[in-house]
Length: 87
Image (cartoon, rainbow, N blue to C red; front, side):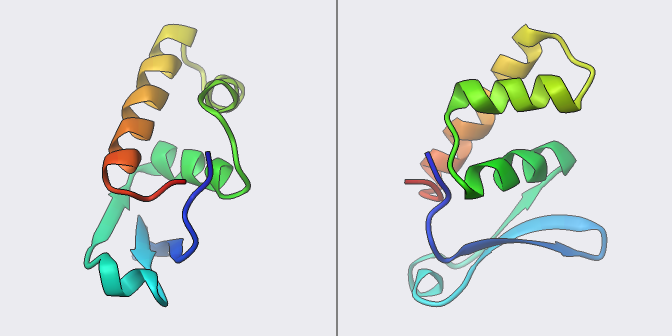
């Protein structure tokens, strides 16, 4: 799984947002706000990653238990898939 071309992560006034640029901006009007963890996961997806790798990255970066990491990654992936931000 990888983020679609035309969607970039930016930090604006301390907030993490994903915005559409170029051709993607013609089809997607809006901004996706991410918390710090969401921005971390998004950065992992930019080079391509699967859910298992995202869970492992969360466990390495944050002091959380595996079940919480799995739930958080699953919820994140579901939302960005529904928004059409990954391929």
